[in-house]
Image (cartoon, rainbow, N blue to C red):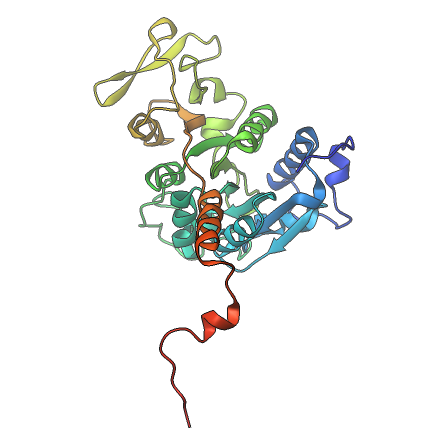
Length: 332
């Protein structure tokens, strides 16, 4: 999949005019992804970006690679077909909280449980942006929108908990305004063999502006965010003097010296679930970084191995034989 030609970020920019609202977090994510593609040295001809429906789903138009703008919620199914057909392709799926977790929820969980080697970027702005500001599956309780004028009464999905519960082998969270962190997470995801799920806190300046500012604003983020880095202590704070540790089945604050060392590769996803359950209204800092990173068989390898085994035993099949196999009826 790699190329001997030294590529730059600009080589991954298409000739299409980028059309998002001024100030949208999607611009930063797009720029970062283009830079990461260049750094990875991937071949443009062997790279595919797949999207569903939504603001984020314009992404394939802006990447000078192969792309597929699919239908609402069905991007995981189409991306799976592409990857299984040609496992040598680098397949990236770009989706939003509405596209992935509403009509596409069923497709997403099956992609995650199958562990297809696809990189999933879920842009989470906790609102429907393209259809002009209705509440989404991740909108907070009480949010007033055009569809919930008296406040949302739906309990929101937690994308990280959902992905962990579905068996995803790589789960991470990052922020659109922290480009250094975003880049590192993307590189880690690209290196992982299996489904990589990345939730990106992304700001919608028109319909849900500053929704994440309480934890991501530069003035507070040192104390309100904690970065989960495998092999390192779970510490945070402007001076790195605060930490988190396990106390039975609970997380509690402690000094940096007493902080637990984060292990994203444990057999059980339970520790990651505890961190995923921290919400932004909690006294504890909101986790970003890598929640889970484990190795397990990937779907497309098993699929092709099975095909080879059956072919060796029965010989190559013919479509005509398949069509005319089994019970047949003649309809007059």
